[in-house]
Image 1 (spheres, rainbow, N blue to C red):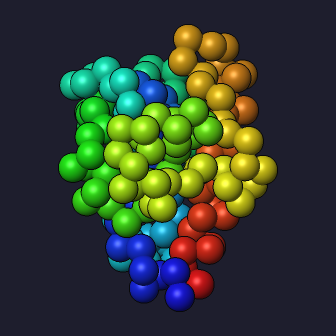
Image 2 (image 1 turned 135 degrees about the vertical axis):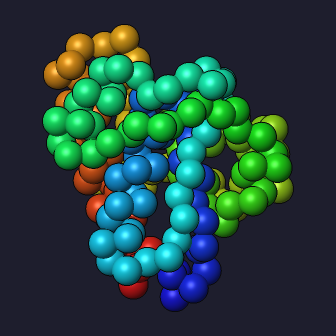
Length: 152
């Protein structure tokens, strides 16, 4: 069963300030609600290291009852990826970049929206609040789907 296989998940986007922090917190919350002990963290392939979550992403998350307070962006590395059983990326290009840099991790990398379309979740950075809200809804649906699959 999946829940016995995956003990830790790394969620990856570009800057680690919009999508992946929100996805990290949503997936962690949904897994915890199901009684799962899977841990979730996040990183960026071109992280704005040391930055907090983007104000717009944080505001939309807050309006939906989710806090990304305390988030600090960090850079993806081979070591970080290797420390996680599953790496969930926001776009197909992120998977290609990770696999190019760390071919041995290729079997661990999947799209965050794998169960809800599998086309990727667009970057809302410096986009409208409405776009951030649409991205939040996509991330929430994908997080719910992953939580259900992982906790079976």
